[in-house]
Amino acid sequence: MAKAYWVSTYRAVKDTDKLAAYAKLAGPALTANGARFLARGEPAQVYEAGLKQRTVLIEFDSVEQAMAAHDSAAYREALDALGDGAERDIRIVAGV
Image (cartoon, rainbow, N blue to C red; front, side):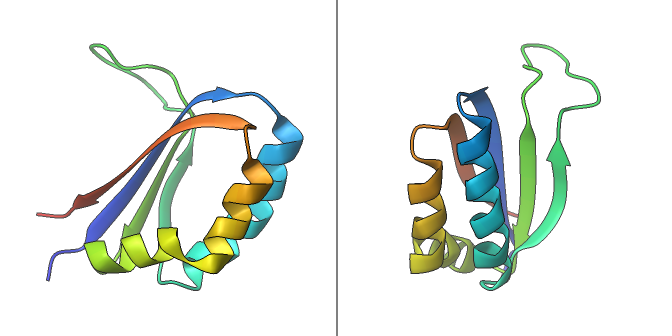
């Protein structure tokens, strides 16, 4: 079974307090569901049509595990804390 990667990019951060509350809850919620954080922060360099946005890369053992982590009650609590504090794009991609 192929690993899966959760890629989050932050288009806009509207409320840093809400983002901090989200981060406090999201990290433990995701790691409890098998997440391994591989990278997070501003890109060192962007190319082509790339945007200099905060990016988070998380590895899971499978797409199903990543989806279950996203749909978990603990992660939903983190999303509630974030509310409208950030505009993000989240994708779950199967590894090759």
